[in-house]
Length: 167
Image (cartoon, rainbow, N blue to C red; front, top):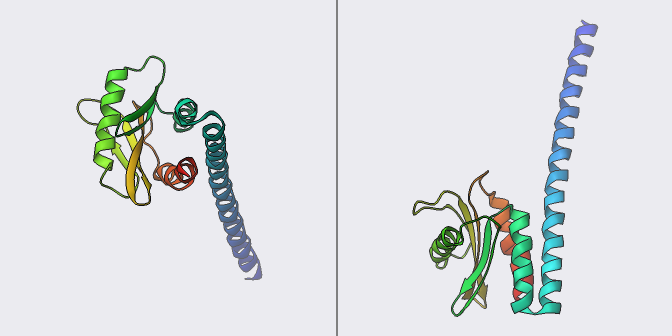
């Protein structure tokens, strides 16, 4: 009876240790993502501060596309538009997808994740950029194929990058 009890306790302890290890690994992965976004946010603010918006924004959009593993990234709004297109990507298709998701997100307060339509395959993230509650620009990122974007990436963009870029 005692041996059965000890065997059961050992099994339970192993299960608890395995769960703790899995939880630790998940926390490390979340921390790594957070560090990547904070680094990107800091670099974006530094580049925009030192090179100015017109020159620095192209560099920031290139980095954003790399971080998202995206085919295109753009900041759209009013008279201002700046975009990055990966090599080999149809600029026309990317521009259509970016504009579509930017228009859809303009009336929303939070980031919008969507699948591109209009015959284009892919996923998009659009984040409305507001200053004092007024919509100024929309940051849009588009990926032609691959895995769907994750919601936490849109959250990090809206909360970390954009606050620094616009202030």
